[in-house]
Length: 552
Image (cartoon, rainbow, N blue to C red):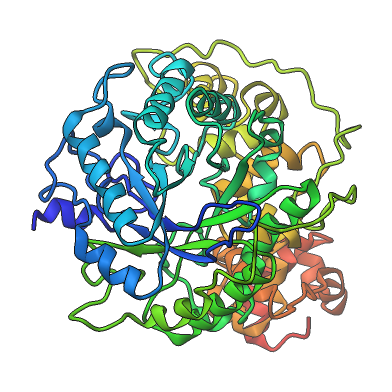
C-alpha cells in the first residue's frame, strides 16, 4: 500500500491533503416508507486529494463488492459515499472524467445489488483546487454546472438516495449560502425528486450550528426536499482527532449535549435533519456510552446518522468500524443496536415551528444591537510585495476581534486583516489584545459550545459577541489564587489556568473566591508596598503569600 495514501486517510478537516468519500444508508422516503436510522460512511474514493488525478488502488480506493456484501449482511442499508470534485471534473466546466465516473457507476450498481441506498457526497469543503466557490477562480456557475452533471449522470440510478452537495463548508461564511443555492439549482435542473442534503458553515459542526447557519433557512428548493446535515465528534475541536481529550471528565450524556443545539435549531425552524458524520475511538468503553446515549436521543427525534467510518484503507485507525482480522470493532456492538427502519416514517424532528428562541450560546436579538458598531475606518489592504513587518505569533482573527472597526470592515476575512496590519496597523501601533480563551471562560454558554476552540471563539465575538455586548471579564489570576492546587500547578500561568477553567473548573463548579481587597486589608506590609493594587496583591499571594501561610 502506498504510504502517502495510507497516511492521508487519517487526516481530517484538511482539504489540501485528503478528501473523503462518505457513505450513508437510508431508504427513500415515500408516504409510507421507513427511514434507516443508522448507516455508514464508506471511505476510499476521495483519499489522497493532493494527488491528482491519482490512480484507483494506489492513491485512492473504491470499495469493492466484499465491503457491500459484508455490511449488507450486517443490516446496513444506507451509505454516505464521498467523491472528489477535481477527480470527477478535472477542468472546471468540462466533461466528467470517464474513468472516475465509471467507478462511481460501479459503486451504485453494487449498492443496488445489496439493497443499499447511497448519499452521494461531494467531499470538497467548499473548494475546488483550494479556491473557495464564489471567488474569481471558481465562479458559482461552475459549481452549478458540476451539480447538474452529477444529477444528469446518476439521477436514474435506483440506489441513489440523496445529493450531499458539499461536505463541511468552512471559512466561507459569505459564500456558502449563495453557493448552496447554485448547487440546488444545478440538481433541480435535472432531478426534482430526491432529497438534497445541505451541510452548514463551520465544518457542519452540530454544537455550533446555530451560530453560522440561519442564512441557509432562505434557500429555495422547488421540490421542497431539503434535509440539513450536521456532523459531530466529541473531542475539543470537534474534528475527530481526539487529541488531548480525557473521557473521564465527560458526562455520559456529553454526546447528547453536542448534538442538541442542532436538533433544537431544526425544531425551532420546522426543518428536517441528519447527522452525516460521527465517530468515537475504540480505546475506552466510556466513549461507547457517550455514543449510545446520543444515538438513543437521535432515535427519539427521528434523526438518522451515518458513522465515520468504514470501507477500505483505514487499517487500525481508532474511529474505524471496519473489522480487523475478521473481528468486529468495539463500536459495532453499540451501532448495531440502532439499526432500525420501523421507528420513523420520515426524517425528524417532526414538530410544529415555534417562535421562542432556543437557549444557549450566541442567541442574537437582531432588532437593536446592544453596542453600536463604529464606522469602519481601515486603510489600504492591498497586498504588498515587500513585507518588513514580522508576523511571528500574529493571529489575524484575534487582531480583528481586538478592534471594532476591523470587525465591521473585514468580518472574519483573515487575509484582508493581515494585509491591513502589514500596511497600516503596525504603523498605527495596533496590537492584538483580544484573548479568546478569556472570552470563552467569561461566558458559560460558550464553554459548553466551544470548549477551548480559540478560532471558534474569535469568530463568535466578531460576528455576534460584540453586537451582544459580551465582555471579556474572566480573572485568571484570581482563579489561580482561589485554589492551592492551581497555585502549585500553574503559578502565574494565566493561559493554562484559563484553559483549566474551561475544560475542568467550570464543570467542577469552581469559583473565583480570592478577595484581593481583603488580602491587602489583612497585611500592613502589603498595603505599604502595593497600596490598593489588586493585581499586584494577587500576584504576591500566588508567588509568596500562599507559601508564607498568609490568609487570603
